[in-house]
Length: 153
Image 1 (tube, helix red, strand yellow):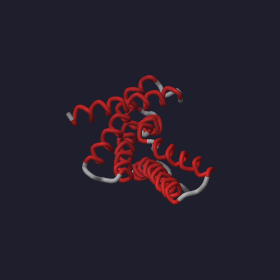
Image 2: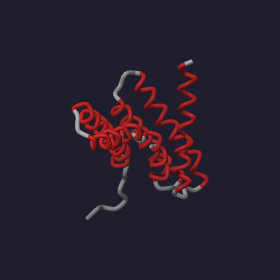
Image 3: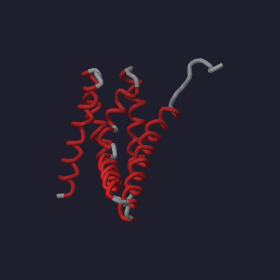
Image 4: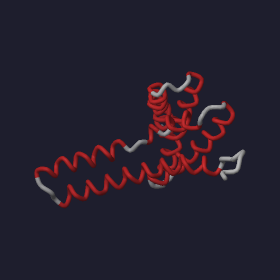
């Protein structure tokens, strides 16, 4: 039962990846790769979280994985790497944490309490940490696998 739910959630994660890619006019030939990347990143992150890794570390590993795959796809199909990778990480955006952070901030307009401040800081740190994990996970493989044909100087 758990595997069926995981597979179902993984397949649903492909939809926002493709939708985001379509908004930014990704070529039709790349849309299946965006769907596969979105499903892969979300599914891998979910599996790692089930293995009791933190959401930040799981997100970093999933973003690094799609970063590596994106480098190879971009070389094979001669398209820029962000065509594949940026759409693929969309299902991992920390929307719930950002939403809860903003709700805590809005509720503080009636008065600041320790609970509201604690929720604001905790959710904000989670959201920022996940965003940094996504950014670094996408950047590291492209920095490592970049081969320069001409010297910089």
